[in-house]
Length: 366
Image (cartoon, rainbow, N blue to C red; front, side, top):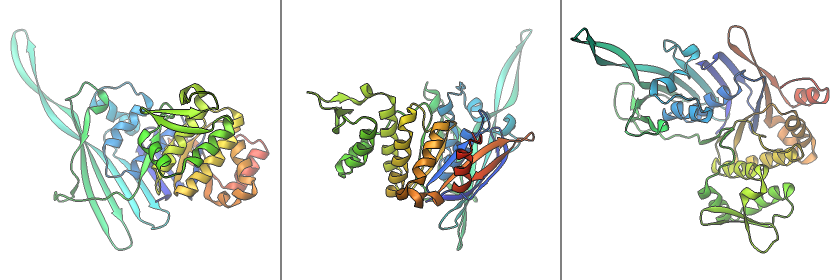
């Protein structure tokens, strides 16, 4: 499953953003700091998991937002912190032309407080945000279905990341509904990029696809001969008497391994990576992009990523120019994001021809 078009309204600092002609394989978002790159990534991620309102809450943990209460965490996702303007995210599937529409609204509850004034007790009520309502529609050529789910405050844990839980999916008239999500997606934040699910790495090894990992890692560290999981830790053979934990080989190796594992995990779906080249030396950028292109094609994954690294952009251009990668040129798209004064986020589209020219002519597109 892959998107060809996305529209974002009233989300974080974005009043409106319209992105079309998304690439089947790679979509790269560039632009100045605080222009909205990560917010675009987060919005499309929520659209890919449209039935799961917990994503609305959990995406803020990638940013270490600092809020520990339900209302505070929720508020930063609304444009200008204004709960009166519902968030709206829409998408169009590349192949099936299925339309997705997600509307997110606050649902206020009433609480009562006891006030003491000069020995006189009185009660007063006030509004408190304790639920978020998810309204989502799936429209195909033959049908249109509308659903509702609710994210509610949950305070049974001291962990702020578990202060919310999702309810049951219903139809708009309140009947219980069964919704089977077709999209599959994972998100790697800039802080979590070095982690990877051991279970999925085990599956790669079990499925005899370890060569995908080794051939890529060897481009960065030629001494690597093998990789294994021992007591829930990842070890590599670098030609000495014993295997060593992968952590001793540095961030670049772990970053590349993490991306490969998540591409495998997201087979037939979408992978979202914030600051994709973080931690990688410029000499490893070509290996990164060659690995991503070939692995994403093998596992049929559509990638969304952010960067502001010129070495990464140059490496992508060079890799796409190689004979074996020419067919990826039409499947790769770069978008330079610029925020206008009215907070509309403008996405300037660079297909390969424009991208190649901009990089070769050293035009600033980051």
